Image 1: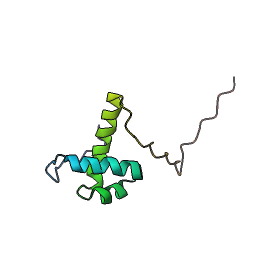
Image 2: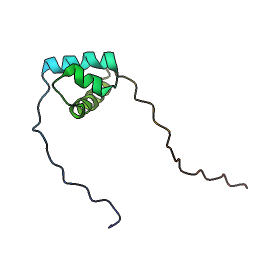
Image 3: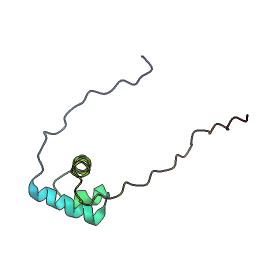
Image 4: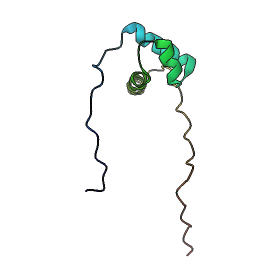
Length: 94
């Protein structure tokens, strides 16, 4: 299908680094303080980028959900309303 966008090849920009216990502890503390403000969490942790933090958070939230433990998971950011929403079809009379 020529209309489909061709994906850019996946390039690894940095070798994967495991999170040290100290980094994860800082991440958890920052999560309590700043919820999903990734920039503030990045500044607090200090050794990881926003992208690495968001990825870590995504995996952490899934783990918390799977284990059913009561760890703090900040609520998702409210969805933004579309500037140009799709036109709504009028309900068919009948």
